[in-house]
Length: 66
Image (cartoon, rainbow, N blue to C red; front, top):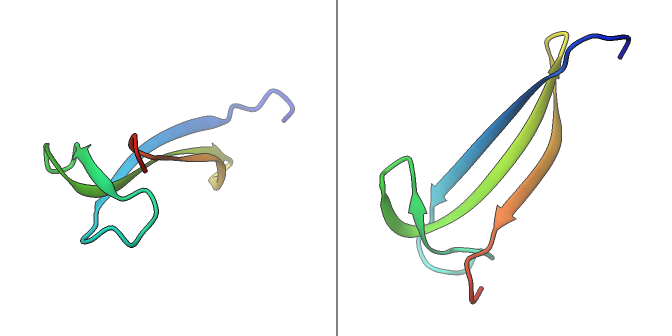
């Protein structure tokens, strides 16, 4: 990119979920509420270049046994 800087943003996201119908939902620690609850957790990496944001990678964390 011609020596231009790209900013990388890492975003850990956890969302509470009721039930277990959604894949990867299980009891997990949620930093947003500082407790263990039924949730799905992912880590997302984004790049920012000249005010354009684009995804680099997404990883959903599956608890053991799911």
